[in-house]
Image (cartoon, rainbow, N blue to C red; front, side, top):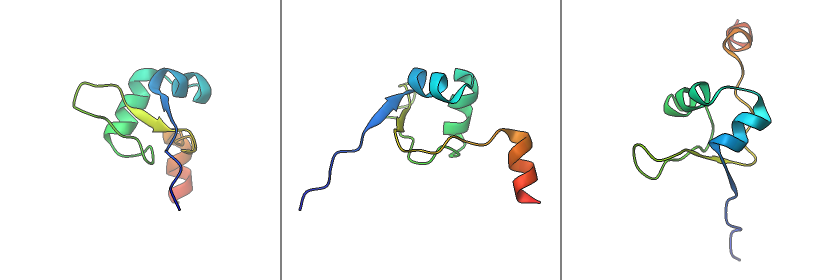
Length: 66
């Protein structure tokens, strides 16, 4: 049985959907905090899986750890 191809959204689509700045999203992707985000080569735009959960804002992430 074949796997369905993964569906990705662009950084522009993800920032609009999640309500965060592109620079913040790029930083989160570089830090590995966006599950499944991939980049073909350094300098290319990030591809974010459609089903990836929205990363928590810094304040909420700190509260979740406590």
